[in-house]
Image 1 (cartoon, rainbow, N blue to C red):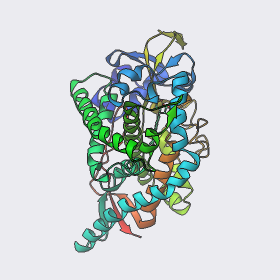
Image 2: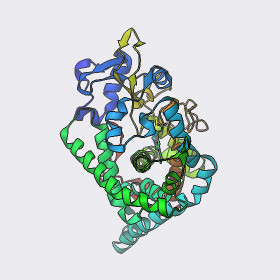
Image 3: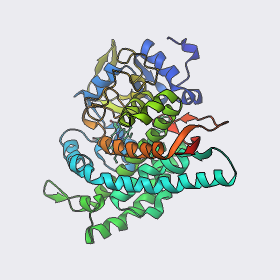
Image 4: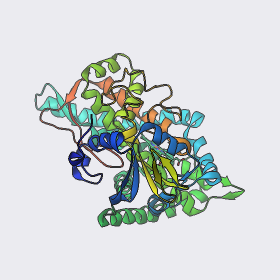
Length: 416
Ligand code: HEM
């Protein structure tokens, strides 16, 4: 379907926030390489074009130095070439394979501890009020706490500061997503950076002196080219883990649950065959892309559809648009866990069909950890809650330009 240009909301407008697919559909079909003046960047929306750019040798992620780099410090997201390979080589082994398998019981324990009190409180209130169904805001009482709690555990950061960490990663993410340059998110992001820095510095000194088994201690005592990491580098690692692992997975968790609630037949299928939990997650990464944008800098002129993107320009690869490209996915605007063109098996690797974890050399390093969190988090809901549905009178609101999801998700259920 094509939308008349006059009906198409601007990339930075509230109307776009309400339904980004109107603009994405228009751009993908009519202007697949579009210069957006408000964000001073080129929007690329077709699946194949996005893959080509993310895998190209003619791009860098230099653009992140000014955005992400300002608030995270220097992290692998903004690095290229050998620097990137080296930094990624430090992080990848502690986030995947055997290391991850060792974390699985920790992930299970952390999530159990979050679920049971929230579930029991909702059931108790319903029984006191004589209601057949209990009600709970799944996003606020449970799902939002999962990713940050897992990271605090793996990095051994103080659990009592969880709400500070959530505030910090929200404010840091708002800074990164602020492609229009509004002053308010800039101020909030810089404040969060400073507060997180003041918190991290004494902690790093303590882990250097008394290392434990946690990932901060590992970073404090690892070597790169025969030298240890500086305090700034360890601090950037902490920030990267909190934001990249917190906001993203939180958005994804809410949307997997919402997508299933909106498709009761598919929810029933997942309930009956739990291997489909992972499939529902992979389809959510496509259909409700939690991270919508991966930005790059053109290192040379790039020719695409007879348009020249000049060297030095910023390119926003719109993952959420590529993930709905009919050239790649049949009936792309349909959430369908039974589709054949979005492989579950390949869904957590660089060979994935969906673009939810981006692609190329910056492919998400936390994909396997996110998978573990979603599997454990969703299975607990299915184990303990039956007849789950969106609470009467509640309308879920999806929001967000860069990362996208729901802040609130009220559901009604019966204890299983
Ligand atoms: C569903 C959850 C997640 C989604 C949708 C997601 C998405 C993404 C995307 C799109 C990128 C590429 C950004 C770009 O190329 O500009 C990325 C990179 C990254 N992600 Fe994730 N992520 C998720 C979970 C996690 C978790 C749990 C962690 C770790 C705790 C993590 C750590 C990272 C890191 C470190 C990178 C940078 C990799 C590099 O630059 O080489 N992510 N993620």
